[in-house]
Length: 416
Image 1 (spheres, rainbow, N blue to C red):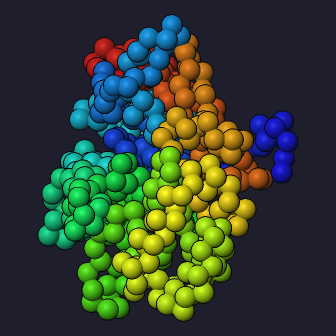
Image 2 (image 1 turned 180 degrees about the vertical axis):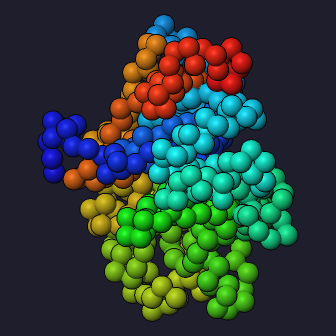
């Protein structure tokens, strides 16, 4: 691995790429933050004055130099690291001209407007590829660009519901608290941002071979259905509709939360070898030897009889004792941490998963490190989440070549 000095001097993997970010909220910004972390120059176009909607989605808020609440929410900060903010009124002809100029000098455009909105402004893919044939243009919408629902609006919560995720998330219907449940994060947005990143990188690779850009149609619905993966393919195979297992697993036993003498822990037995080790650790050789339970299939079929027996055994010791014993036996297990406990974990600290970034106006914004670990072209964290329009003068002047008088005239007309 390179040392710190070498890492700082190494260009990012995408340092030759410029991204014009016309997106807001979460899915698009999550994608473009990935690209920024990998070294791309990301120019985020925002509405003059208010900027990205999520800037106002607080509390909590980021902090200024005195530790007081700043103008932007932490929600916004979580997905906009590494970008330059430019304010442009794209509803105005002058603003549309500025965006076209930026698109002509960009490699990638990412947008998540409603279908048809950008076409009215001459900022759709067909319009922009006329001035930049190599442009990779990624549109992110709820339902995609085609089909009977393409015109509908929608948020992450809606897609967790209609995409099937909530039908397999939550406690079993037969137990207290049973019923559909959304995940604790906006998973449809995040996974769409991740899939969009992959698609953009693939399109850039293709452009490197062919010289041609292309259009990418990303839908939250498509991505959340794809996330169903193993559950859906099981349904295709046997026609049985997957249901909610709560903290249990449809295909593995035991793979669940166990109540112990002083709290709760998670145990995840993934194969028959780990099963034998688990039985040894809990000092139940009789269960290990029982032919009903020696294979995964038997434990799944007989879970209703087996799990209560295991649960009684797990009540005999406290969490620390169990974790020491189970880890010594190479059985995956762990505490159920809140986020304060997560960032106290020695492994999390060693991996540097918290990134504190100084803000230009003073204060620090804390974000989560990218999980992308490239040894040759490491991720860098050079720009904190931008203030609204903090790079407007720089981008118009340095990138587009506008003089100060021209920039002032655009400001007076409230184009920027």
